[in-house]
Amino acid sequence: MSGKRLFFLIGTAIVLGALCRAFVVGGISIATASMEPTLTPGTYLFAEKVSYLLRSPRRGEVVVLRPPVESEREVVKRIIAVGGDTIEIRKKKVFLNDRPLTEPYARYTRPQEILMGDNLGPWQVPEGYVFVMGDNRDWSKDSRDWRVPRTQEPLPFVPLRNIRARVLFF
Image (cartoon, rainbow, N blue to C red):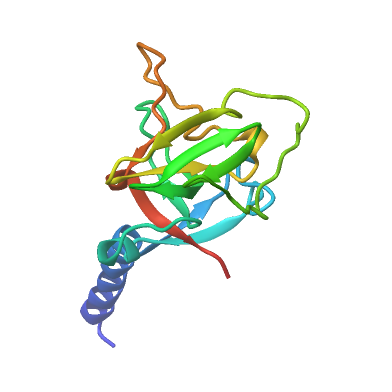
């Protein structure tokens, strides 16, 4: 094989790999305990970016997103409610459309304490937005906590355009 051909093949592979990582699938590392017990810090997973070009995100999916608060970096959270849903939290219990939500993945490490975000709503999620929470409820910074910096008004809904990818579980 000639040097030019080898150089061309290596260059093509690098470009295709970069395009694949940018637009199809990429690796993510879990940095915090906010998704425990589902995802522990140090876990390395793949996140695919194609699904949401074809369909809207669904309740229960774990996604990579950019929070609505400008200073935040990308985070991994679970979608609890989508546009049109009504979300309410009473004494840590999540209600979706007036029904208690069954959440076998949720973890409460401080069940006797009522924390900020343990009583919210009811709020209707606007179309084109989602409401997200971490599975480690007492240690996750999520839709219950995000606030407008100047006014401290709640900023609970994430625009669909802020969702970057869907986490893949193997």
